Amino acid sequence: MRIIVTGAKGQLGTDLVAEIQSKHPEDTVLGIDRAECDITDKDAVMKVIKELKPDAVIHLAAYTAVDKAEADPLTCDLINVQGTNYLVEAAKAVGAKFLYISTDYVFDGEKEGAYEVEDIKNPLSIYGQTKSEAEDVVVAYPKHFIVRISWAFGVHGSNFPHTMLKLAQTHKVIRVVNDQVGSPTFTEDISVLIDSMIHTNKYGTYQATNEGYTNWYHYTEDVFHQAGIKDVTIVPISAKEYGAAAQRPQNSRLSKKSLDEAGFKRLPPWEDALARYLTELKVQEPALFPHEGTESQLDPKTPSKAYIVTGANGFIGHAMTKKLLAKGHKVYAFVTEAEPMNDLRCDHLILLQGFFGDYDRLFSEIHEPIDCLFHFAWKGVHGDAFKNYRDQLDDASFAGDTLRNAIKIHCRKFVLASSINTLETKKYFYDQEAKPRYTNIYGTAKLAAEMVCKTLAYQEHIEFNCGVIAMAYGEGNFSKMVPNVFITSLLKGVTPKLIEGKDLYDIIYIGDIVNAFYAMAVSGVNMKTYYVGHQELKTFKEWFSEVRDIVKPGAEIAFGAYPTDNHIDYEHIDIQELTRDTGYRASSDFAAGIKSTAAWLAKNMERF
Image 1 (cartoon, rainbow, N blue to C red):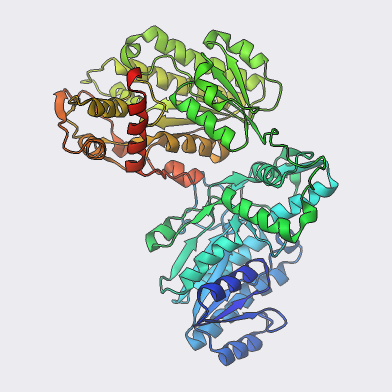
Image 2 (cartoon, rainbow, N blue to C red; image 1 turned 90 degrees about the horizontal axis):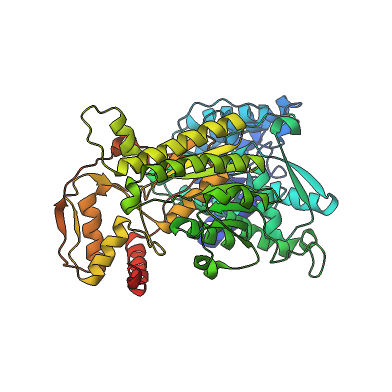
């Protein structure tokens, strides 16, 4: 296959040419830049393409100086629109495939969730307008690929992380925009996708970035943390305060549904891509990184951000604390007892012991900026506690008190844990024939906590998300949640007694739960409530039959031993919204999670 790559010496072009030559040594890759062919010269473009007779043209060359384009729209249009048009016409003349790299800037950023390929374009800048018009030219040619990317970075050019590292050499304070959300795209990773795509005939428009979302401020924090830079203060500001000449979209989230539907592999998480980028960059430009023994060298005892986790000695709170510590963050863990946290003790973990009534005192011991508070604390989550309406309503009230304290210490975000029981409770609000049960007291209290906290957060201008958790299982769960109790019964040789199980359910592993809540903290859309599940619906009977087959094949299950007195209308739940908004995707293998949970339960059988 003969492939022409325009902009072959640029940031993406360098990596792409290397990728194709490495994966397809039989291919002939012809890189052209302005010296070989000026794409704004129609005759020159046609002459080169007809002489080289490529099977495919990958068009990377572009005018990318977004702010300068506002003062020089004619040049931007000449390169991005007319140049693309000339290349498409030439490709058409020889019957070559045509792949065009576009941008998130074709959208206005006003949508709440992730942009789909087919969403209406409305660029805010001259640059975005020219890229949008170029897309229109390309899409008219049947043998086309359009790949929209965002926030590109690579080791062969100038980009955001490289600029931040250079600024850190001369500035002690850096002001960074914190109200624009998107996804970085590592040129090495997108090159792998482009290479696989151009060797197919799966024509169409795609969107591809590294997985996950962030904003420029948090992106900078991660760059400095991974690079080992700790003596620079990053100040969050609004895009309006920054005052760039060209307006950027506030929301650059791009849906990857088109990749999934075509069978293309998604790119790795952006944090992983950043780590690989910095490793390579350190070899090429060691001067950008702190030297061993200097003041800027990263101290392993210095965390990147500080978080609060309430209920940290509980099932989910403990796992959340563990994840945050593993990512290098500092955690203020609110616990009722310290002993369950012994396995996590380290310099980054600050244990603050007390009950709800002690929270004012616990908050008074925090004297640094808190990025996010995860509120998991709840006194009664199973058994007879469901029936104690005073305790349940106290829990709801304490959730509001906790949010008030978070506001006082200027916490950036508050993420509240809720339950699937709230959805059943909502249903009963409008059903005159409903027969509420005791679990609806719990669901009512959880729903009250959500609405109180959401209202306070909106009025007091603190970011807020709520995660409605499906049926949970996993290591560390000593409560009487159904999956772990079911597995314990199987291990003991006792026939589990369950409901008939015809309704749809979702079951989620603890590792996926904490990943979902972390995704909310980083890039959840403000004021949204998200469903947190495995994102796969099966009947209750199917789920637990599958668990039985993993733990103890052939064991008897008494389905129908208990009456089916509740029903969750999953048809009214958007189980994919969290994925669209944050990039979160349940990634645990169900069988592996069940086996791991069963092994843990077998070791802790005496606790049940």
